[in-house]
Length: 381
Image (cartoon, rainbow, N blue to C red; front, top):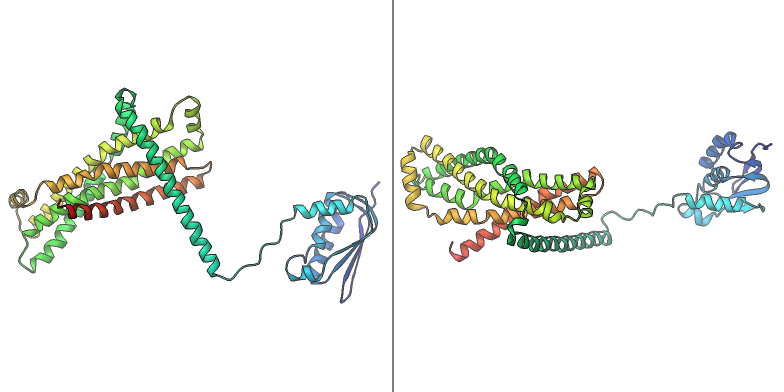
């Protein structure tokens, strides 16, 4: 029969003493739990002497409740000034108290000064290392995709034409209404702002050239690419990420299929075909929007608009804009598919990767377009 767990606690200005007796096991310690909690909260920074001379049996439950009491001042300077003292020998008590101490969470490190120079440099260094690692991994992904796409297109019978056609429809035809409506609105706003400014100088007819060149070279393809970055890039990342979470990509590898050939290449070729079509539609819609505003606000009739467009706007501007569409399509596909491949086994990772895919795709489109505009201007295109 177990003896009840009993303790005697006394303290003075210099130290506190806890003498325990009886059996300290799971069956007997219930009555001691609340008093020991109260004692631990009231001890303050003074050493505690634990006497084990009269201790009977003890198990891990008893060791945990005793360890909780004697470690109340181990964190901070008080631990160095007031070490705990255990008196008495017992066959199992010291070992079980040591085991209980191992499972207790260590003391948190002292907080450092906010925005310290060392911490700032460490954060900058970690961010730089992560950036270089991201660039290296992206280049490796691009290289693998380029090699496998080249080998697949060299043997057309190896391509998955049904999947490519489906992605052309999903990324291109289904997006035509939103791209056309957005470009029409942008063309109208652009023509209105330009026309109002030019009216003050009597140069309203130049609205035609400015709107047409802007839509052909920049706005048409960029608007289509940004819509694809938000709509299609996120879809690619979510679709492949869901397959990663459900281990379907691992199943493809087990069946001897290359996920790059099954998942990435059809999406790449589908968007490379679809985005130039969307860019052309966006250019036409934006130009129509500019013609409507020119007619209704500035009195430039549609016939006059088309005549001036044909006479003063070289068709090379359209080819410059459409030439950037396949590059944007490749960048959007690479970013979306790679972020999808990086999804872990939880939905938090899914959300983070989809968000990263959209942000990176939009940023890449804008930066590439800016660089292309400077290059084309330098070479006279």
